[in-house]
Image (cartoon, rainbow, N blue to C red; front, top):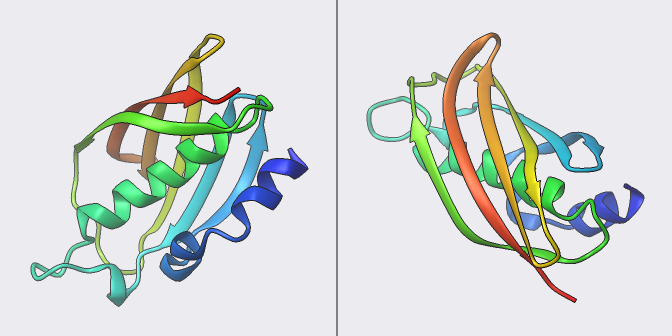
Length: 127
């Protein structure tokens, strides 16, 4: 998993957003961030794009745990609840299907025990 940490430690966008990798295992990753003023939209709730980026960051980390370089080719997110400034978000990505060229993942973003977003995604695994 050191390779994945090395690959994503230079993710400038995740760093700019204040996201960190908490755990990486084969087919799994967890990332987190605290919602800050910079993440808020005009309604003073967390911008959906920030939540999507956190889920996508965990997705990217999990998708690259099997040795091949994996790039996202599809994802879909549902926002279930709004998130306010100061909340601590955790995104977990879990592999649900792994094949030679394609793998599928489910992601959940939570604030404490509260599920705030659910995402699914597919990666293409390069040779």
